[in-house]
Image (cartoon, rainbow, N blue to C red):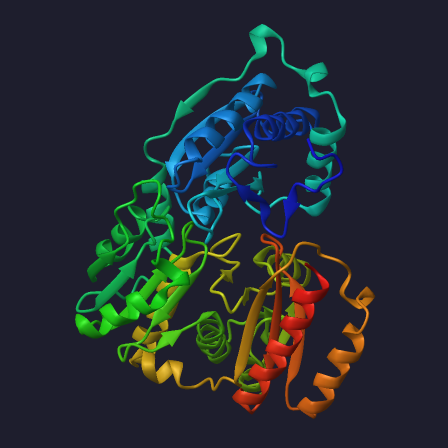
Length: 455
């Protein structure tokens, strides 16, 4: 075991299945560590229980069994709900009065990766402090010293109606005075966790739904489908003359949309549409939204012009949620499509975000293209480069000078942001500015520099 190596990234534990830390040995210990913490607290239930859901990737069976064994060995009961979106587990952890919820998913990553996201009894992702405690127990503690005695072992059972509960909860976020009758929706489920529940939500609200990516086989989650490949959905919108397109990722906590003209509507635009409507209705607390450093500067300009403040956090919907909870904000999100309506969900929820956008269309009697045009993006280039080492950027010889040189050339009309991916061995270089050709050159220059220094 690579001692001292962190388990948790920006969004739980994630790696290629059957490689550290996503091996049965480590996963079992993660289950034991969580079980130990739940039993120690003490648990909210006389017989502590954890809800576990997953997406559709092949390795989900292996991870599910290892986690379940670890929890059972600590005297924790497990309730398995099968494939269900990540936000559904946050909902069920609260709704079923569980002590925790676990999602087995690598989100938008390909099928050969997998991951673990943990929710507390309140339905929110666990704190960094709790992640550190789990990590300490897994890496530095002999958990066999805390195993439950024979008569106290946990039991496991499958819950058959979990998807139905989540569908009802999602539908309740759509305004009761409206239906989706007469609306044609293209829905891409990415062959992932929402392949059953998402079509049911839109169909039960009355829409005519053309479904893509609803034939999972364990290998095709996110495979040229879903939120990472929204062009497929956008093309289908034009082909079927649909009113709107909705494209979810593998665990359905993020969404990309398309208007009736087949133009993409990313997370920044969805956030802007929602913010303007809520402000107009007097329902946007403190007239503030939360975004990340990756959001387009065009969002700031539009919000500024309409008396709405934008607070920025580091990348990751977990950090957006933390900021929202800390200061009492209700709306936040990421350009990548994690949109959080804190009154409805404890984390990003692709279906909730899409339904909210459809609700604005209904309330204002406007097509999505009209709503989409309100925000004008500043040209933005994102370049990813593979790295072997994630060294402190400011410690790299020549990095501060290169960044300063690029910022000087942007002349205050743009910005450069460099960060490491929290889930992959990548450095991400984002450059914004009025001249797309120039910012592309700046991004490539920085990416080439990092590739030489970090490989």
